[in-house]
Every structure is written in C-alpha cells, then in structure tokens.
Image (cartoon, rainbow, N blue to C red):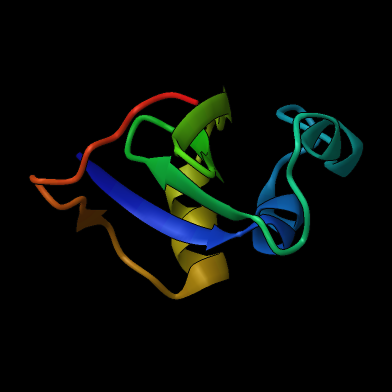
Length: 86
C-alpha cells in the first residue's frame, strides 16, 4: 500500500470543511506533532504506540491537496512492516 505521511498540523491545514474540522481531528487524538498518513483511497491513519489507527477519510480532490501541502509523492510501506491496529 502507498502512503503520504505528514504531521497532524499539516493534516489540519489541508482538510476540507466537508471532511473534518481541526476540533474533530483533535477529538480523535490528532495533535500538531502527531504522525499521520493517508493512503491512495483517502484513509487517514494516526500513529499510536503499537501501530496505526484509521481515524477517517478524505474525499474529493484530496490527492492534489495532499501532495501540494507536503511536497511528497506516494511511497510504499515496507513489506516487512507489521501494521496492527491499536
């Protein structure tokens, strides 16, 4: 699976009002310093101590918004990486 990683602060700046508000993201545990990632389907995952939690998703033209906000392109996760929900 391919992802783009970013901080919680970047995520809060790029979400559309129809998706989330910064307050809603904070309510599920996102802080400015959080590590989050988004996959090509728009799923948002928040890094927890033992893995990743899916906390929601983006809609619409999110790919353009994500690449513009981060300056990054999609990168595959490591095949040996164990990804367990917290």
